Length: 535
Image (cartoon, rainbow, N blue to C red):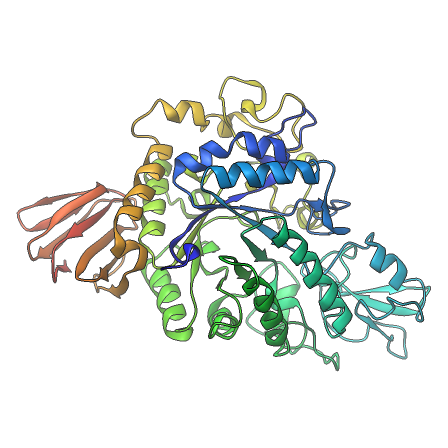
C-alpha cells in the first residue's frame, strides 16, 4: 500500500486569515472547522495549519511561548479536538507546524534561562561570551536584519536568535532540550494529528565552536543575510541524529508523516534534502524554496525537479508555488500581456503533473493576487523595518474571501487584522461557484483528473526537449503514458507533434494537421505512446 502522503494534495491554512467566527477580526479554529467542506470539495487530502500555539505574536505565532496549548485568539484545545474530529470525518488529514528551532522570549524556559548562569535551564538556549571588546562572539546575522546576537545584562552574555530578538534559539546540543521538544510533539500525536511540518528544519544545530561564516561575494540583494555563506550557523551534520529521534517518535504512531522546510535554495537545498530524507529513518519528505522564486521558465522547473530526483534519489519531493512567506505565484509570475486567470489555471495543471506531493496555499484556488498594502497597514517585522525595499509577507496573508457582497468578503464581522481590498474580494468563492470556467472550477477539475491518473500520482518522469517557452515531459506508470505540455508564455505557441495522440483532461489547447496549438499559458495532457514534439 502506498502511504497517503506520497501523492497527497495538502492545503495550507493560515489560521489568522481563513475564517473568523467571533468577530474579533482574527481567524480561529472554529472558523476553520466551519469551512473544511470547502477544502474537501476542492479535492485535498490534508490540511496544514500554520502555528496555533500560545504566542505573543511578534512573528505571528512563529514565536511559541507554550508548545502544548492553543493561543486564546484561535480558541481552545477543545476547539482543536473538534477540528480534528470534523477533518477526519471528511477524510482530511491534519498536519500542524512545529517551530522548534527557537521559542518566544516570553516562554517560561527562556525567562528562567536568561536570569543567571546557574539556573536549571541556563543551558537550554544558545549563550556565548562577548569578545574582549564587548562585541558579539561572531559575525552571524539574523534573517530579519542585524546581528544574530542580543546582549543580556543579567548573564553578561549574548544569546543567539536566527530571526527576531524575541525568538531566541534553543540549544539542541542539550539532550534535555531535545527530550522536552519530543515530548511536546508526542502530546499532539496522541491528540490525533497526522503529521508535522517542521519549520526551518536545517537551523536546529549551530557550529559548537561559533566560527565566523565566510562571505558570499555573489550577493546583490537588499538584505544583509545573503552577504554570508551560512556554513556554520546552520546545516550542521548533527541535525541528522535529531531527525532520527523525530522519526522514531512518529514511527510509534501509525500512518504519520513529517515534512521539513529547508531554508535554502539551489544545489545546497538539494544536498540537504538528500541528507534529510535518505533511507527510512529520517524525514519522510522535504521542500525548499526553489519553486517559490520569481523564475518562470521551463529550464528552471526542469532543473528543480531533476535536481531533487538525481541528487536525492532516496528522498521524496513536495512542491508548492505559494505559501505564507512569498508573493502569491500569479502576481510573481505574471508577465506583460498575461491573463492572470489563464496563468492560475496553468499553475495548477503544472503542479498536478509534477511527481511527488503537492501543497496548495489558501486562496490560490481562487486565482488570488498579492494584496497591495500601504505602510500603515503592515504587521510583518521585516517590512516594518526595511520598507519599501522589502515589502514583507503581509500581501500574501490577507484574509480569505468567501462572499463578495458580505462585510470583509465574509471573513469577519469585525475589522480584519489585515484589510480585505476590493481587488481581492472580486475573487470570492461564491462568485466562482457560479462560473463553470472559474479558477476554482479549474482547481477542482484538475485535482480530480490527477487523482484519476496513476501516471500523474506515481509515475516516473522523463523530460522532453522543445525549447523555451515550452515545458514538456512524460509521466509513465505500469504501461500508462501521459505527455504533459505547457506553454509558459503569454503568446500562443505551435508545436509539431509526431505520433498518434488524443487530448484528455481539462486541457487548454488543440490538435490540427499534426500540430499542437497552445494558447497563451495553455497546456494539454496527451494520451499516446512515444510522442515527440518539435518546432
